[in-house]
Length: 359
Image (cartoon, rainbow, N blue to C red; front, side):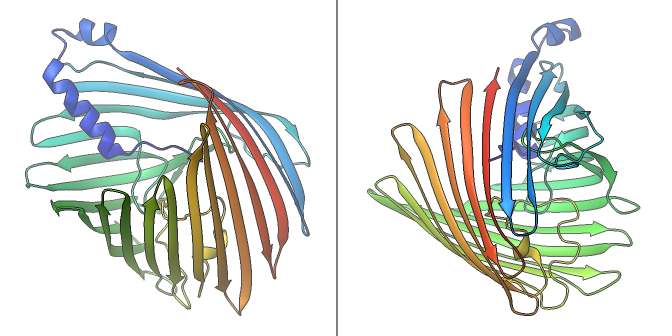
């Protein structure tokens, strides 16, 4: 349900300004753009172990200058406030507001660079990071991302804020490349290194083919970690999908290492979990099969996902997600979800409702 913007897109956006540079710094400031959103959100969960819930409000505000000689500045902050809690600490956060974006970006025909607090959206790096990121554009049909991230934070409207915290003692380095020289195919090898924590390396391949009345696609990803302490981790993800007359369907399989789970692979965040919650899929010795479908009907975006996970000592868990989104107009969006979890360790039902007004 959360919408994220990758730093690759941010860099390319900065690069597009190269063709319409402001003549002076004053012009770049005047032509800058303000964006923001107001959001309200509520959730309630009733289960065998706990009953919890909260409602909250959120305000996000951002500003980016126009480009001047290929350089632009961006800042952004979010403030969240809980209005009601079903129980103490259901909305557990000491952070009321966070400056999640504060960076300087430089765009050149051969490279884009962003330095400072920025949003990152990769397989194994998500949310906001204090980072230095470069996108090399000199290789045909290939983008090469080279970056270093020191701290990470979370700033969403539908969850408590999480302040910037250290990634290990020395941060993490990443090299992530995408090759798209073959029609329909994107090959994405990557490597991360966090000193005194772990090194994780992997490859993802996505293939999509469109036909006159339908389309098909497959994804295959494998990531392996070498841990400095403890068992190594691994993550295997396979997915097949198709679309026919507007209805999208997918079938997937996820497996983690028998002893180490995924290790430290998600230390910088992750964007691989297909579920609304699905924490069990990253446990040690977890095997997950999931089936999902989505469609647009009368202006409503509808999606359903069912998954079965077996992990640990033959512990099982089922999750069913039903998500509905509706745009009242271009600025106002409503969204809600029904999440049903049923397993050996817990059983619960959870309802979420949210509204976001963007400007």
